[in-house]
Length: 358
Image (cartoon, helix red, strand yellow):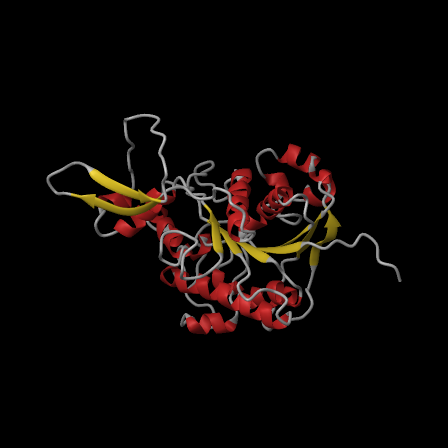
């Protein structure tokens, strides 16, 4: 048998909850993006169906979009079931930056899910999280809210079948549903998810997948004025960086991020539609960390902040800054519940302030 149309390139797996599952036809400028999809025949896309399992399985229980060449049909399919917008935009942009290197994109996401559904059992154990879900209530109302499952159920069904496939890296967009569930364990949960995904992939591909394959994620955006959320989202953002405040860092190697806290869409929308910005920022970080390209991908990082009781001035010192273009001399306002308790929450404040331009 002769095989045709075989490409050699990089495969990226994209996972998370609804902001990763959100499809291309649901974002701003979708019409143009879908119309141009056929210009990238060296990008191939795949989307797994939403199915759960109580035990790790070897074959997917369902497929929403089988391996397809990028086209208006495969990229512009039905809401929620065809290609992830963030996954597509990230892949399309690194494909262009890498001189049309073939790219395979796997979408395997489920809206309204907590990170514990996607964690291998050993990761749960390391974070002292029981295997069975308890005291869980969804953090927000969502039309595609996943059913209540036990922990690891989606790792078993929607991640484990792919771990026999050599992968170049993963992209992750999740955290909204952990605002009210194991929030204070999220730094452990996220770091251990990455660690064990890498270890399992490495072992099951006989070392062909790198033991520290690149792992990118999207920072959660702001979406509401509700005070119950304002205090929680910065906490999740902080934990997304393993309680450091920025990535890459020394806690988990080869991790990169797309800053999104400034990409708020309509008030009370948990799904910001500015996904081109997300894809661009994630691709810049990915090109730098995953591919070693010398591209700008970070804004200034806050090194320290000082304040004296007898002064109204707050002095912020940034690192990794060669020059700053001062466009006005009026300063800026900080409006945050955290700022009112600045000294108690200064780490969160530094994080929000420093990464706003990241």
